[in-house]
Length: 289
Image (cartoon, rainbow, N blue to C red; front, top):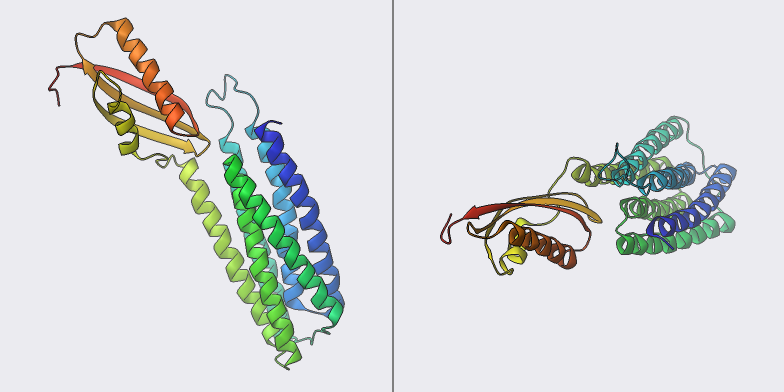
């Protein structure tokens, strides 16, 4: 099974589980009149929507190279992670609106053993999904899976906050229910900002691999005098780099070409995720600077 297919499999499974969790929270939250539980359901529904966006992004990201995309489509996966962040901001807005209404017109939630059991069950499901999705995201070097697992991690903390609000309501502190919902919206917004910052590193061509590491690999090759002007960009699983390698000016053209090919293969072998290496060979004296 290809990498793209593996990512899709993970997203489809999490989509099913996230939708089931969101629906359960929404139904029981409405039934007992808990603002924080309904707010948590909005967050879970945005989890499901992010899975759908992720599936679309992965489908585009693993399309073959074409003349309009000679570097591939991998950045589309990173771009869709920003879509997830936008959904989180939308969830924040909905939660804040609902919470403010409950502050103005308080409603005492009817907390019972069923609602508590639903929250505990959905919390356990979220925890399992987060661990599984994050592990698979690391294994497959997938931005969409990692950002989606961060989304689910936020859901875990919001669910814990809802359980705390249940306890507060039972102790007579009804106003804590919408206040905790507002706190949940702040946490969700923080996760959205983190996702955007991570995605911007890829989309804005932030350095992926330290230049010193690449320089060290090159200097281990006999015939290489110096290595400089090293640049890297892309994603962890799709690194593009270019560099200048200085060699003896008396080196034959054919030998310089073979040396360049050897360096390229050595870099790809020692640094995971490198898909493209452009080497500019420069002639110089033995003691050139």
